[in-house]
Length: 130
Image (tube, rainbow, N blue to C red):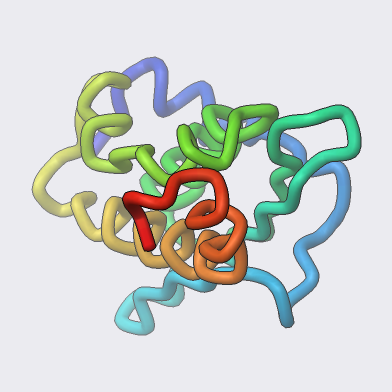
């Protein structure tokens, strides 16, 4: 299945990370059935917002959606990152075919794992999340 134009642009020219993710600090999403793998690291940036690092391999849908998510997360607040709905992001960029929906799960798992080490920071900022 072809990707919509906005996702195809991310596939053809993925968002470039400033450095490779540090595996020990990265959230990982995988689909072993087809070899998709995304390592995503989020860290507070010195100038504010989040610094995003990613390493991705796999099908065009996973690469495109990982790139779109990394681009959307870069420079954002921790709270906005925690609220990112990967399925909605995919829909807003034209959607994925039924055979490409696994990309949402791969990126969502990586994002959840990347946010996990930052949860204490998030809870400190918003006591309702404790």
